[in-house]
Every structure is written in C-alpha cells, then in structure tokens.
Length: 212
Image 1: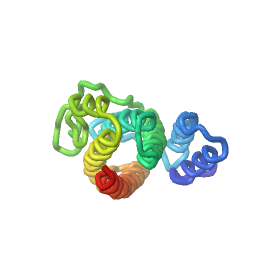
Image 2 (image 1 turned 30 degrees about the horizontal axis):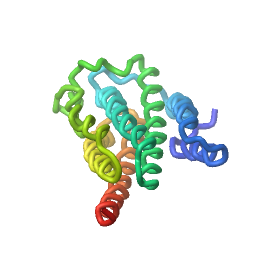
Image 3 (image 1 turned 90 degrees about the vertical axis):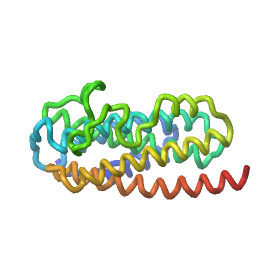
Image 4 (image 1 turned 45 degrees about the horizontal axis):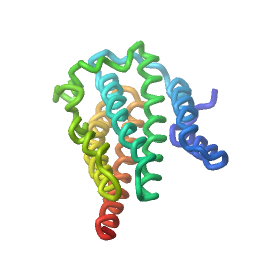
C-alpha cells in the first residue's frame, strides 16, 4: 500500500473533523489512522527490549497519557476558548502519536510496559515511571482538578509547559539515538510540535495574567 506520512494522516483526520464536527469523535479515528501508519511505513525491524526505540515508545506512551488526561479535563472546563482549543488539539495529536507508538511496539512483539517498571533506562537515567521527566505529581493533578476559572486555565498551561519540556528532553534523545527511522522521525516531530506549543502557551499565560 502507499506509504502515508504521519502529518498527512493527521491532516486528513483534521479535515474530516472540520467537516463533520465533534472533536471527541475524531480521537478514535485518529488513533486508528495512526495504527495503520505505524504498520505501513518502512521496513519492519525488531529492536531489543532494552533499546532506545522500545524504551522511548513505552515511556512516551505513558507520558502522553497524562497530557491527554489534563487536556481532556481542560477541553471540558477551560474558561478561555483559546485554551480549550489548545487542549483539544493536544488530545487529538497525542492520541494519534500513541496509536503509532502502540502499533510499532506490537509489530516488534512488545506491550506498553508495566507501570511498576523502571523508566528512562534507555537514557541512562533510570527513574520510576511516575517520576520521569515532565510528569506532574498527584498533588499537582489534584490542584488542577480543584482550580477554577482563569486560575485553572493558567495552571494547566504552566503544567503542560513543564510536561512538554520533559517530553522534548526524551524526544530529542530518541531522535538522535533510536535505531528505527520511524521512531527517530516521530521523535523529531514530537519535539518540534511540543516546542511550538510551549511558545503558544507562554503567550496565552501572558495574555491571561494581563486580563486578570
């Protein structure tokens, strides 16, 4: 079949969303597209369990889960419509990426990893999963759930910026060292997109604080 780039597939998903509305409904479709892309691009390889490729995909899948959790909350609760739109975009993009990551792991015979594993060993910085770079603590997540109004919007943006910085650190490492070209490319895309989103969210924080 004809190879489809991740950005092209995501673009088609967004076109569908714009025509039919209902951003939440698009998440399932985007995940399906990502899974198909994961199996269609490049020649299959089988990295070892302790490789950068496998470690990055397993750890980043978990990392994305928290970003999606925060963003689903804000897609429903954000006071500012631009913040709400940013949260929706993060959900769609990161669910798409998770679909591709799960597909590649499955292709190689690996699952998503146990939650009690040691993460970031592939970066030579072993740490519990719940303490990997950028992961927000249970106390921080509780504070976000309890916050309201503009304060909630700002807190979400600050937390997501920190989350993204951790993700970029991981993605940059994988982009330089992963053995599979698909993983290197996906890591580069993640780092670029999250860097752009940090810039956007910093602008939102500045505007919201000026409007308080």
